Length: 122
Length: 109
Image (cartoon, rainbow over all chains, first blue to last red; front, side, top):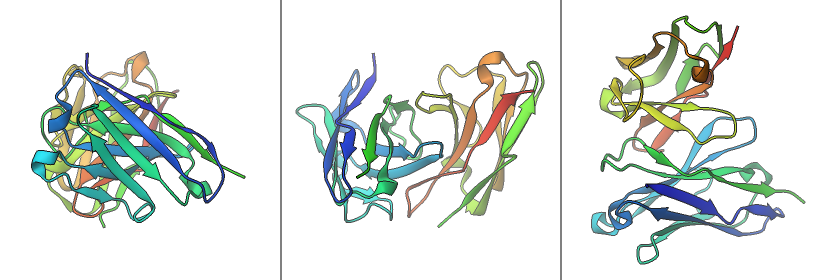
């Protein structure tokens, strides 16, 4: 069964750091381009960033609100995606989803995890 | 940056009725790069449509997508009770890579 399971969410103070993980199973992780998408309470979806597969260069792209503060990485030996979040702000409070595409199309996401909740508050 | 606008914000309909949801882009979008998602409360989004009109695996044929350029439409032929949810359009571009519309909530009249 194809599955993405996020973990690592929690309560953190403004200015703090947190690392999220996304464990993948049921597909060839090292070929997948992986994204993080977040959703603030009661709001819509916001793309956070993406990492390509290592065979496609392993490069990253980020949304403007998180660029320079968030870093996406991957460990293909562990089938795990990471999101390192530094200098957190209250507006980073959201459910964070990892997502991918199983059909090697980079333009939409057809597999999503259930999400992990990050709360930034003093 | 391409901005997506969805209308209406809320659509109140009865089961069995037809739902027509609109997604308008601030600049022309390649049809290949337009997708639709459904999200129910407490759940992750689910891909419905990609490439503007192709149904994702397992999606019933009452869901259909159409459009080109700056105007795209998601149609739900006859609403089933499980279709009441929020629907988002999404486009793929240069920067940012993915942009979502604000969503249309389809609720029970």
